[in-house]
Image (cartoon, rainbow, N blue to C red; front, side, top):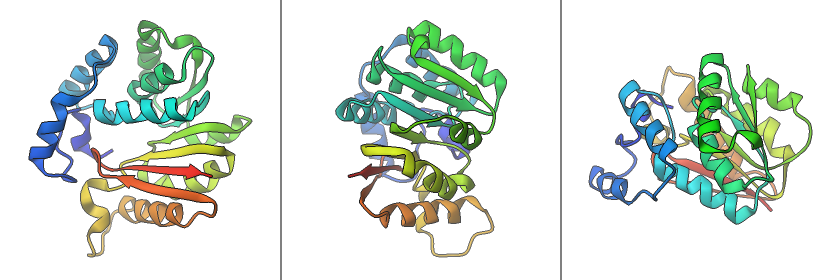
Amino acid sequence: MPPSQGESDSVSGIVYPEIEGYLAPLATPRHEVLIEMEARATEEKIPIVGPLVGALLYQLVSLRGARRIFELGSAIGYSTIWLALAAGPESEIFYTDADEKKAEEALHYFERAGVADRITVKTGDALEMFEATGGDFDFIFNDINKHEYPRVLDKALPRVRKGGLLVAHNVLWSGRVAQLTSTDDKDTPAIRDFNTLAASSPGCVYSILPLDDGVGVLFKS
């Protein structure tokens, strides 16, 4: 995520600030642990998806009836809790992050939110751990290093079940994906490639929601 996304109420630059301000207090009521995590993220500039995207993830998982979920890049586990609450006690959810300290903190939050029993915590390279985990998934959430996004599509989409979803965060990248000027960073071109490939994936329907920093939703029909 861009540095600005560490704050759950940050302005992404994707929609008018007035709209951002209007949406913020409309965030759905949520677990006290999530509210605590949002406050910490704001104070310590920890990147989380925030309550608006969290609620979207909850809706998508609930509507799909997703029970087997893999999360690529999870930080302190904020989005993982949203996914776990939506999927229910019979679900199987995989948390991944390269930082062992963050993983320990995430597990603590999972326990306090009452969802630890349905979450497997994996530390290390997210894509390597994904490849080492067998089976297909109802729902995959992608929020790893942005230059890896095209690889995620290549590795993950074949393992999304029919009727499942591959969801990616930061797909508008603070508007940089729409800038026509050349860029020296490796993240912006990778996100553009991800969006182009997702939109042209056979048997799939791709939509980008201009919420927060852009949420890409790829439905495998």
